[in-house]
Length: 227
Image (cartoon, rainbow, N blue to C red; front, side, top):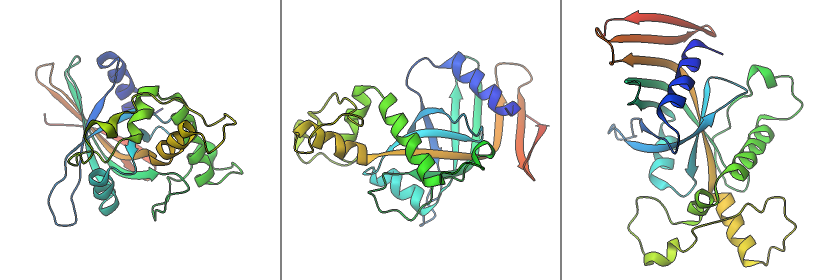
């Protein structure tokens, strides 16, 4: 595991014990900056360069900004340990095979390069595993209307507050709960961020310390800069 990834995982454990949202920004087609709060899910074990986040396919604002420019920056605040991680990289959208998207999933990491399955098959398997691991409340949010838009049907659109996983259950597609589940599962996307550069700023010490980790020719170069 790379040094920056070890530090980031340690900081995450020390600072957060529940849901984490990370600030994300990129440049839109019109040159204006975007700003989103995206929900962190986990570190990808097969490749330390990848972080995974949760996204709804119908989140038109976030989805549109990433499709127009996958290159982005993340700012991850660590208030307890007084650190800030700025992560530069590229987003990949792992969507349901039923959804039409021109964006390919991430390439397989070195540990999976010799695998007989394709990148699409691998990431769909990961998407299914993540879906099953989510809480029933989190799964329910993928039945809701697009985030950030003005409600059109009041509270009725948010009546689903819990949703069990039915991926491995032999239930008729005519079952209303199964229909609701399939709609939510198809709306669920795994948002994968591939990191190219990390800036770690420690402001709890004096003088502050700023380290930069850059990927050069498949090797991480570590440099200390002025704070």
